[in-house]
Length: 356
Image (cartoon, rainbow, N blue to C red):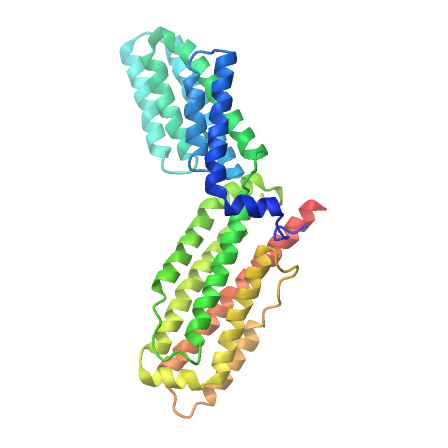
């Protein structure tokens, strides 16, 4: 099955009402934690509720909850074990302070890279253990256990109760971006438009969609077996969308920079036709990503696009510099769409091979 197959009604329902569902899921997870506390009172069980809120509050997707749970568990275990090791090896406050300082320096150095949350958790877990003195070992053990319990509850509720898959949110954002770029481009190509359109706000919104896709990639690869080994392809897809947005903005500016360029471009139907065909492909690709089409429409050859644009430029009676720039930008956009086409087909092949 393709990763761009038609979504189920439940998946569509969850995506449309994600905010309400997310609130209910966090409430359910906290209710489970307090019910367990009522039935089996444990020390430091407040950390279970804290863990649930931290993991689920800003990450409604299954992959996001899983990623943050893994980092929280790793950070807690590493910080607790290091702190217990210090307490076990020495009672000298100066040596304890030196070893703690070295650990905090290492955590600070690495906290801005990958697994940054795990390093953050390791740092404050170490401080909690050391501040507890001789009771720090017992506190570290119970705190680790209650955090593990909170992670299990968060993952279980995220996975089993109306789950929002990061893969689905990613594909719908991708479809929305392609659809939005197509609409912006086609609006500038309309023969009924005789002055620049204010589309900067729409382009900014599409940029936020692309940034959101980038933020979801780690969660997508964690929860989706079909995309687990496609990290680089997913990153290239995000980068290509960003370049397309920039090119579309420049295309609009090239057309409207002067009255002469606007008139020449407006009357060059061949160039306009090629630009419309690319914008039309983006619209069809968006429908494919949403699952509304079973196959991805074939994109015209970039080499043929180049030859056609050159032919149209040779036919100009009064060449205008902006027309050449306009055509070059269309060609560059065609190159990026060709890359998006290859990446989408590669992702579909990989997902189908995984499911076979």
